[in-house]
Image (cartoon, rainbow, N blue to C red; front, side, top):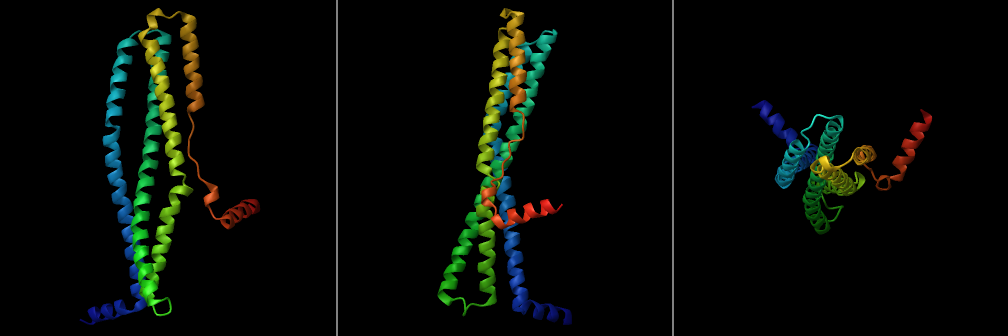
Length: 234
């Protein structure tokens, strides 16, 4: 009983309750972000399912058309498979940015709503007449709503989604061109075949990179100066 009484008295302290509010809001943020992320991942799998089927059909066409064992036929196959793997990489990367963007946005809506409630209560009572719990609730929601509002902009989620989509389209074009050559492989002379293979290599090389951007303008200028000073001192 003494232990229970000590714990009960400890939890009655306003400072402890304020810490508990922060922990509860932190746990809520983690839960909302995790669950919304899982939901968006599941929905993205369903959205991409027709594209996966289309890729499967493309693979069947390539396997049927490029059945020879010559060096050029083998090279075309490898170019197609290389483009397929890189395209999947950009698709997965784009999906990650897509999931993060919407999970951050959902969290921003949740904590902006809680912030509105906190502001309404604070306006009624006034800052001087409000207790530590209400002040903590207000400030914690200001921090969380601000973080989730600015995070997609700082990470440039929209720009990264668009850049990855462009890469996916580019590698799909390369695959489509290889399919056209595969269907007409027997009708093309060696020069046209060599030119096409060289063109594919150039396009593949030009489009393989890591399209990730961070918008530095959204980061506090004082923080940037601090980072620059720190790197200079090193």
